[in-house]
Image (cartoon, rainbow, N blue to C red; front, side, top):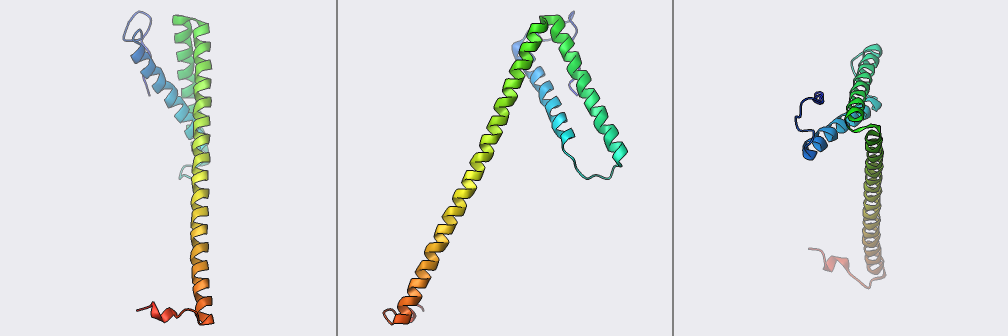
Length: 148
């Protein structure tokens, strides 16, 4: 997956904020993607037992990786920094969910707008055709004058 973070004795870039942000961002993205994948239920050729075992193994792997990260941050920076990280993560996830919900609302709004516009256009065309037919029927307009 992402590899384990270096131990406390080696300094392989964990003091570099860009490296840390990238590494932890990739870690949380990978665990979120794994959880999202596990929540999806699809039809596959595997048996139910094999699928269940596969999901369980992925859940355990993600939980173990998250526990390692918790231990590393707690030992390096303290428990308060880990709790701060979790708080920030919850805020980011809430913002992400809100952005996705807003995007869905915007898409629905655009779809409703297009349906309204198409409906108005159809109504105007049908009105024009009906009015032309009525005027032709009354003898005030000869449609054949306008057709080739």
